[in-house]
Length: 290
Ligand code: PDD
Image (tube, rainbow, N blue to C red; front, side, top):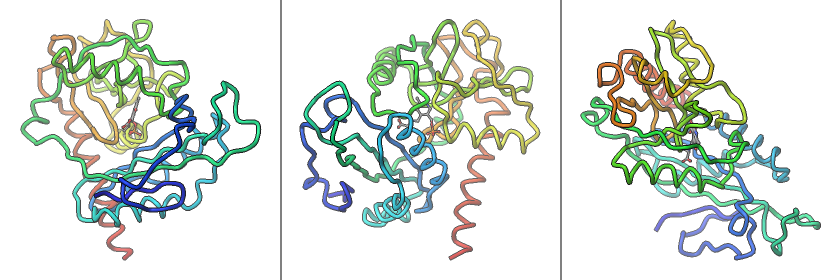
């Protein structure tokens, strides 16, 4: 049975329990992070923890994140994931346990901290190289999706709509703009220029998104951060999503219409390779330090 972390203790998952009065359970009053580990090495863990601190601050949840790096590493070790090609640590912090009210607990309560680790797999190369399909779905989320809250119902409904339609991904659309995926950021390539929605309250500031923007700079790819209209999608040469569990994920069809050549394009392939190279360098860097 997997070993999980709950409020300062590591324990078998079956022994972990939380109160029915937890505000995460009753009100979705909490935040989370998902951090990738490659061969037991955390990738951008510091950036994930900085984003977690911001999410906590935005919701006014008082919690000191010191010690969480150690929790991540110990979870990977306890679950024998050091040699897994890909694993992830999910961590959530809720405001804590208190009688249900719409206002915050008057007396300070201890936040609930829960984390687990598990392996995950990238799609096989032959699937990736064919690309993935998406449908557009109205973005019905709230207006602060820059905060990584555990309130993911609109994301889940959108992703389910895509699955029900036989598509691989959902592309969320608000006011005629292709915003991001249900759990991934979104990029388009027009005439060699990489375009993605700017950081705002309407997108999650994805860690993978930022890494890919940095890599694009290093590869000499022109970058523009601006909204992408739905009407423009079918003029794009390439589309792709980015995210912790999708890495760089080519999107070759939207609402049944082919994009570009109908296969992952050069920019997508180059950025995916640059991303995988960076992962490899990060692993080797940690191995060299000892
Ligand atoms: N999802 N946009 C949304 C709405 C997300 O939920 C995520 C991540 C991203 C990509 O962010 P990052 O590159 O930091 O993983 C973009 C996580 C993985 C999840 O909910 O499982």
